[in-house]
Length: 245
Image (tube, rainbow, N blue to C red):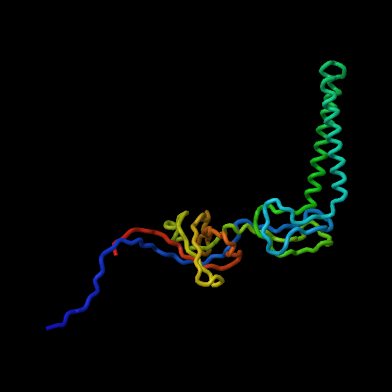
């Protein structure tokens, strides 16, 4: 007689099954700009260090602005005087002591003074480099005393609170790839650590040569671990379903 065949028994349970699609993607900061000079002036002070985190609106660099500051004080005083003249002219015109033409002239003088003040403030703002958003600055590319001109690179700034992971997929996946699908990404630079995110955008065009489409996922980066430019391997978790196994 034949010997019994050993078997392993396991209860049937319900599990979540997922189809996985692999791809390669490159990290980009959520926002990224190069900070450059807007005028030709000398750098008088730098307010940041390499790799420092800064807040939106923080002044990063000052340029020579002695003349503009003097003009600003003059413009402010002119506005105060023009407003005072206008306020004095209003009751006089109301009582008929002075003409409406004089009142209109005083109003025009006040408006002109304010416009000149705004122009001086704009010139002064051009001599300060500020952070357009909160983020981390890169390496300092300039020193105090350097003469800069429009387009001179001072530093870079990246908003790395979340990171964009752009990758391509064959167009055959278009019917199954949707916004909101979860992704899991890894990179050699971070060892065995995994980073979770989700798909937030699908390009509106398919490349006619490669027949592929660019897809974007967003990965939260609260610790600032992820850096722009890193190549990552990711898995898209699609067609999640319950099944008995």
